[in-house]
Image (cartoon, rainbow, N blue to C red; front, side, top):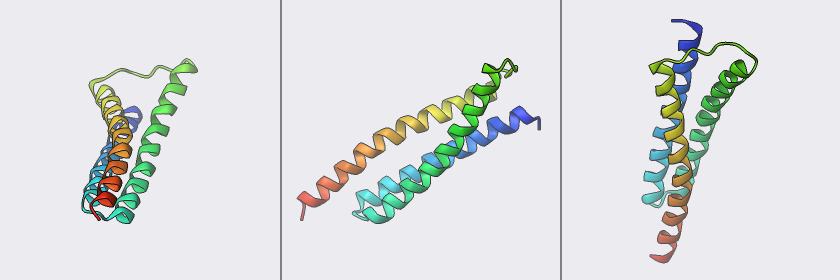
Length: 106
């Protein structure tokens, strides 16, 4: 696998792991297990940041005049990163809602 393809796959892998952990965190929050839910969200954040760092490196390469070849794999990596970022933002609101709902049901 070429260097660029490896970077694309790292973005996909990290973003996918982050997304899975976010969903697990929300499921824990829905069950009222907020500590474990927050732990999953924190772990997801680590993977998201890693994916974002790699994406940033690719942007820097292009900004410095290096060619960053466009491919379907690169497009998929960006799509995974963007969708995970959207889910990440929405999950914070949902986590807050679960917290409020749980408190109101006591």
